[in-house]
Image 1: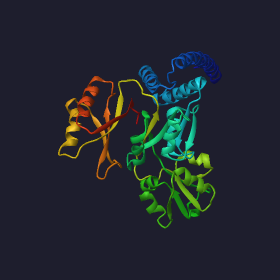
Image 2 (image 1 turned 135 degrees about the vertical axis):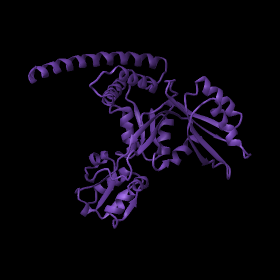
Image 3 (image 1 turned 180 degrees about the vertical axis):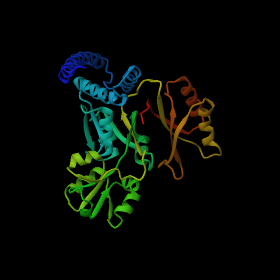
Image 4 (image 1 turned 90 degrees about the vertical axis):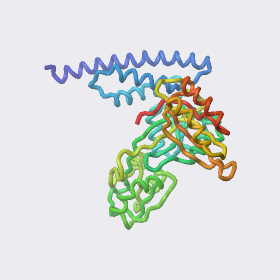
Length: 356
C-alpha cells in the first residue's frame, strides 16, 4: 500500500493536471464567446449545458457520484460563462429565499444574482434588459400553482427557457436557538401551511404571522430575540440565525418548481417540455376538442391550470404543459390542429426538462 504522503503527492499532481485542463477549457470558452458575440447569439444555452451533464453522466464509471459531478461542472460552466460576460439573473427576493437558492443551483456562484421585490419586477428587469434572465416560482408540489406567475405571461413576450426543481425543507430559527425564547413566528403563508402539524404540536400557543417571504421572516427574526422564522437553511447563514428545529415540514418530497425566463428560445434536447396558454369559446365540448389533438398524436399533457382571463367576466384561460419541443414534427402537427379549435393561444416556451 502507498503511504498517505505518497497518495497526497499523487493528488497534488492530479490537481495540477485538472488546473491546467480547466484553463485550457476556459480558453476554448472565450473563443466560443467571441464567435457568439459576433453572431449576436446568447452566451447561455440551456440545451448545451444539459448535453454536457448528460454526456458526462453516461461515461462516468465512478466512484465520483453523478450528482456531485453535476455540481462541480455547474460551477465550471458558471465560471467559464463569467469569463465571456457575467450573467445577471433577477430573482424573487429578498436574499435567502428559496428562489435565490434555485438561482444558485441553476446558474452557479459565478452568476450575479439580483433580488427583485416582486414577480412583475423580475419580468420587468428581464424585459428592459437590466438582467439576462429571471427566475420565478411557478408551483409547489403541496400548495399548488403560483397564480401571479401564470398571469404575468399573458402580457409578456418573454419565453420560458428552463425549469428548476428544488426540494424544500423548512427550519424554525431565531437568534438564540431556543424554543422557549420564541414569542412570535413569522413566515410566508405557503411555508406556514406546510408546517401546520408541527406548529400545532410544538408551538400551539405561539402567534403565527404571515409575511411576504421566508427571507423577510428571517430578517425580522434577526432583529428581534423574541421572534422566530420558518425559512431556508440559507437564511440561517445570511441573517445570522440559529436553528431551533430542523425540517419541520409536515411532508417529505416537497418540491417547488421554478421557471427561467428570458429573450431566448432553447433548441431541441430530446427531453423537453412545452408550455402554452389558450382560451376556448363558450360551447359544449370546446375544451375537449382543443385538447383532443394532443391525445390523437400520443402527446403527454403533464399539467393543466385554468385562470380568469381578466378581459371578460366568466371567461377563462388555460395553461398547459406537454412533453416535447414545439419544433418536433408531432408537436407542430398537434398545435396546428389545436389552433383551429381555440379562440386564442400562445406558446410560452419549449425548454429542457428540469431534474427532480
